[in-house]
Image (cartoon, helix red, strand yellow):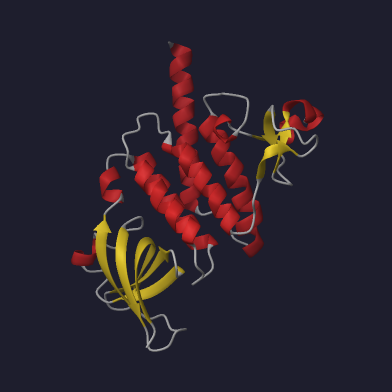
Length: 253
């Protein structure tokens, strides 16, 4: 009888039958893995089975290719620490939806598992300027890499130079130097400063999400005839609205 026990992050919960739930988790060794949790919709389990929670999972099945059953114990309730911060909750929801929609089943994801835990720990820190968004964008770059799409943001695709990088080609995913973009500059994606760009603007977080969002949508989800998850779109909209509010406040002062 196949069985494993591992720490995991819950990424999806769906009701199933009479009071049960199909829970999808991310582990280092077993990757994205689903299992049935008996009584998963009960009031006792509802607080445990929240996307973003860090848990200990015991999975077993009669055959290795079956859905199997999970017993889950809570280790750390991450979203509960952010109940008064809608933007961070949106970040958790977006990350979980992307993991659920991007990763194949039952393939080891050591780097991405560690990166996801590091991101969620970062989001728990006191951070009034929401610099965690920079970590989130870097995490999405890691997700793209895990999906087989690695962007080259370290040198200019046209000249080979490593300085004055300002843009990213929406087709190749390669950085472009400021003096190499020419008439195509307006068609390019902006490379934010925290990823090596040279234009330090207040909308850096917006630019970062636009960058990774473009390639997630065009290279990953479109390949499966799917749209970017609504949770990811909601996060981008919230960050853009926050930037617009800050810009409006500064203009009126």
